[in-house]
Image 1 (cartoon, rainbow, N blue to C red):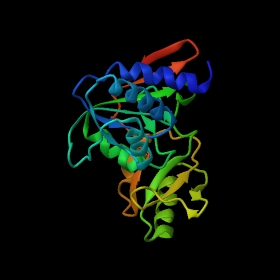
Image 2: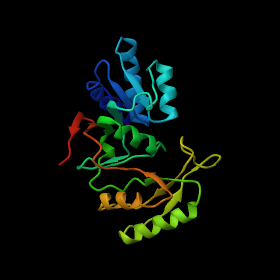
Image 3: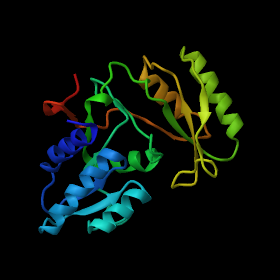
Image 4: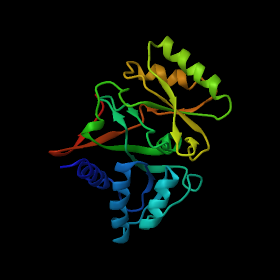
Length: 231
């Protein structure tokens, strides 16, 4: 089973939790896109759902496949969010934002009664931090914000480069018009402390640590899909 097949397996398992009439938060990324494709097939067969996408990219795919969409203002409370992750640990702490949609992903997850994470085995880690942590920042005062992040990291014993994410046209810009610093910490022993203290930096719009948000994770591997619940 290759990587795409594992993503499809996770998406198939998550689809079993979608019920007729649900208000869905629909995630961003390669695994979430497999879920959208499967969801589109079910909608074509008569499943009635309304979705709130976490990115413009996801919105385009949903519209292409006929999945009905609403804004979060129209559906401020959701039944279920289904999204991928760049990393997940045994406590269901996540790193998200590799695709640059972390702010909208976190808002949608917070608006949902439950959040199911779908991922392949490669995303499961003992300690978060192997994947660089995305930190979404305001374009104003970027250098000041970076210094504050570096000082915070030093106080927590974290080391590693903090790099501005780039695109072909210069600095990467999120759907919300912000930029992203990717923090290559390597290992984050206390994700809760880092999350709380990043939230106190004025220039930080949001960060990719999702803590106490996932209800459970569906992890796909060569042997099939399994459910991961917090220890």
